[in-house]
Length: 312
Image (cartoon, rainbow, N blue to C red; front, side):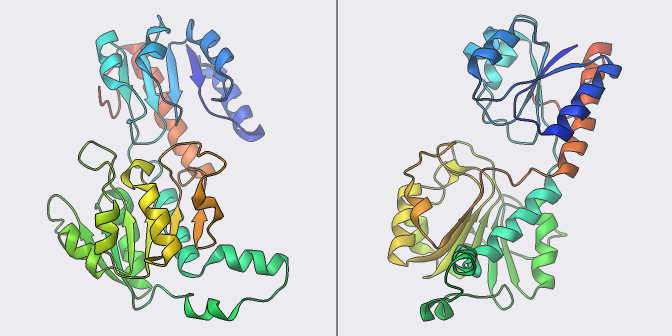
């Protein structure tokens, strides 16, 4: 079965993918930037292991043998699901495989933003001295209120850790979660009460730019925003303005409105922003868990069996 792994692969993963030939899978690693090679591979592809580069209706139509689009991760907003459905191409994701990694990265960005990690790193590499104003900003999780927008797998993993560190945890969700390690609150109340707001909802028409200028105005002065979900949840221009003026104290961002962001993105020029290149999910352990699901679904589609985590 011909499979495109549409993402870069390091030496270890390349060897791991090559070994899948023994299971009847011929894996072609294709970096998203190599568009010509990708289009050449599409003619023979039966499966695409998809990560972040958008799969449009045009791309799906260019793969006449395509049977399965397997998202390596959860969100399928970068796949034209309706186009796949019209073509009879199955679309699957893999909830839970990256939960631990994303929860840990969320905590890392939260702590990095509170402690102004970019300033610490720059000082250690240059002058070994911090400006006195740093003392007015660096803070701890303990004693702060952390608001989790959404309460899916990642907040469920993260909330008990935050409470163990001494934080009060609020969460906003469509329905109550009886076993939640926190207090449920309406979104507006959560924004007004939280020292740290962390986003954990999918990007959909009703969540696009959920954190806009109005939402930011309702947040506590000096609050921290963390986003490991989707960049489109945040109005970046409003966020930049709030960070520049001090309306917000800091941000920890793994995702951006446009990916990859333009080199001149003003967020990169702010020392109260800690950034990561949409890599919250990326650990060796996540990749192993993901490969197990992806390989199993290839086996199932070849055998005509029901697929795991089919969304279309």
